Length: 288
Image (cartoon, helix red, strand yellow):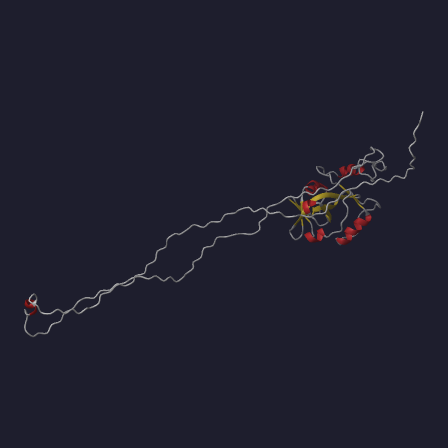
């Protein structure tokens, strides 16, 4: 249960859904007009946190700088859209109670049931909530009168000017991981055919006639005999051997490629119209 001693931490926290996903950051904190206890927070969602969605603090818990609510991210984002204008009306409160399936309201007033404290940072005293409420247009002050001055520069106690505001679209970029690239080395085998010249010896029979030059060697033995001569024949055989040698180095590098991407978002602005119901008179020239 979130109480007034945790308001400072709540205002600076990130809202986490029951599914563990980040929903957004806390925008405003609303307290019960009867008990002064924190009852609702708004969560900044959407592009750049331009939208705020109400989430009940019933069942929520604080841990560090994270506020965990018992609803998942999509359920919170689909909650009824209610203007963050400093107070919850009875009808708006009933819508939220029905959506979040909560039991009846604990407020007893018929006007502003909950008071928003967007600037409620740095204090945990519920009395400060009353002080902030007394300067909000439409809310009763401690003396019972209704405050008439507010954030706009128009009203019975201000000048005759009116402030016109509009939303400005701010577009930026963030770097996120899009994938991984890996170098992986594996072995591939293939057949190679190489032609190698090989040689071998063959027997060749040579005959020469008896001449005066060789007659002595030819007749030096017995006239008839049996003999045997032998020669060794040689040949080359193919010998295969392999060695591993480095051939190149391969590495990973990154380059940045910039491309144009269009972003479309709806922005709101205020327009000021003039309602003039006065009776206009024609110009009159005084002549001497």
